[in-house]
Length: 151
Image (cartoon, rainbow, N blue to C red; front, side, top):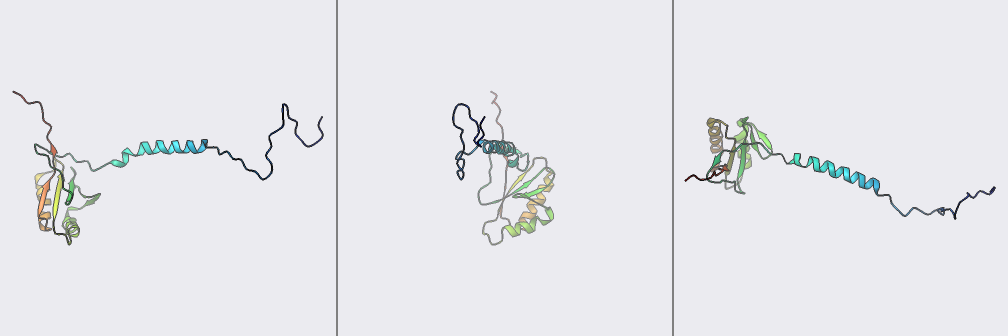
């Protein structure tokens, strides 16, 4: 029976830290767990962040794409007009176009409209663009899918 304050050890000396020393090993398991959870969350949410404006473009034989220097107007099936990421009311479109092109020499607009929009609505937008001083209007289409040629 040991009456001193030292613990009994079987098979060797006990490992006790000296007072004032710190543990030099860092437990990284919780860090790795948190990082893996964040990675899974990022992988699940990343595809949702790439959503754009859903527009079913009409198809044409010639491919058309907007140039770098023009403004792209997107018109959805529900007649919502988008400039960049914001929705614009048709009654405020001329004011927004004037603000965008203020002090610019070239006034170019590319119209990207759903194929199910009534023709009259597109004409209204073109008329507003002309009233705002837009000089060139381009229409964006998708390339037509070519089927196998028959002989």
